Length: 315
Image (tube, rainbow, N blue to C red):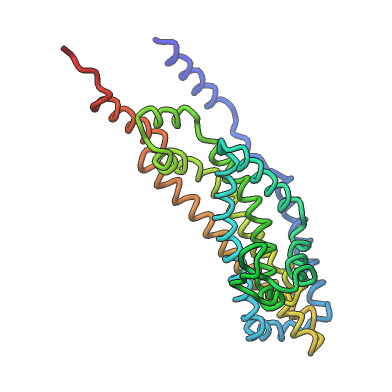
């Protein structure tokens, strides 16, 4: 009898002789009971509060709240998309060989990541205090192509958009840079050795692997962006918080309107979370179905190495 078979026989014999003791897991029951008691206490306390629960569904579908919901989504999507585009550009400048571009990208990230978002929004909104008019023309001449009032251009939406977008673009630059640097340098050098252009290397080798690192934090940042739009309420932009405050200023039902706004925040954040999870699973599934970017790169490299002019000719 071979040694592995003997070990299996002894293990099975011991398993049959040992009594099967069912674990009771008292700790799980205690923790579950404590959680249920806490939830029950919170529910009872909420029911005893001076809140008109029957009015909350009305505020949830109120036109003012719904308009604030639409404005929140528009501001968040516009700021996030623009931040992703600008962040990719800053990240490419950061990893480039141009020292001026690297310095500018580093300074850009340091500045807009260091200033609080609320401060940036307020700075843009009060830009007219420094520049009453925005002019575009030829410097040191009287030729002016565009001459606009700063207050007319810097609306509440524009100020909130710039503040949120510039701050998020600095974070996106670091996220994209981390994703690009996570790709094995040997694969890039192998693709370069077979004559692929920088654009081909970026599209075929780098991006498919970097997206695994880029997608999760980008999804989290978009969720933070949805909630961060609430800071635009300080300059009068009518998002969910501002819409709730506008209603409460007339009927003084502050908690009811805020709960309605909280409901819609939870809805849009939940939808964004589901979309992020689906995007991550879809990318991983398609990547595994195709054999992964690393395997595809190796197959492409092997195919190119046996085709002219890289193949060695025999006399």
